[in-house]
Image 1 (cartoon, helix red, strand yellow):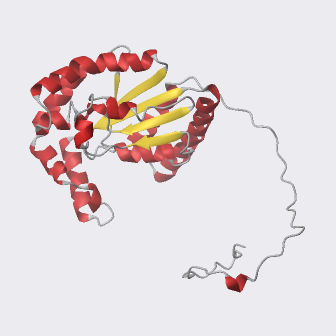
Image 2 (image 1 turned 30 degrees about the vertical axis):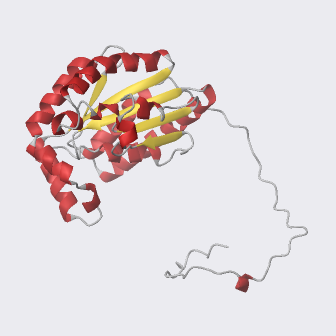
Image 3 (image 1 turned 45 degrees about the vertical axis):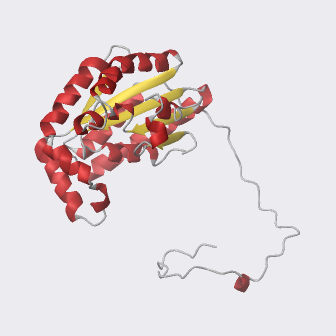
Length: 268
């Protein structure tokens, strides 16, 4: 598998993140409402893409929704209800790290929903998404595809790396045991919900860096945005008239464990 050189990847990512900032400002100015869904196999790299999209953006404009297990009250609600509460207002981008498609994937495969609930979802979901689109929401859906071998490699990395161990759960083990069942559920989900109005965009994710760049580039292509012109600004001088700073010894500072580099001055 061809690999991107680190310098090339980092430069491409930086350039794309500049464009994401432009997109963010355009969404804010024009009052757009954007929803992006990230679905796919466990360890397919959804979180890594979401992180690179959001790390330079304003969290007040672009936010992540990653819902946990529904409460008993939420289980008694209309299925889509808890997701509706997180939809964007004008000038917002919402990234769903897994979404209402839990019902077509993990809930179906693991038996967390009934057959009737599953069938109802498959028929209701396309209409629900058409309602969102008619309301003015820009809806973009990504499916991250990863091979059996690559998933195994990433699971082992999670198990053996202290900083990544938290990512591995008992559900991940079950996803390996039920690989074929998940594949069948995904195929059926696509058959019902890969519509002309709201298509699924598949991201080949065996190469994480390529997947990140390709996904971000595609996301940018889905919204016709323009760069915002900012007025020229000049910082005024600091006015300290009438201010007397209290003795610095009266403040409580955290311990400094690091020596200053010789070519840098200490922050004031």
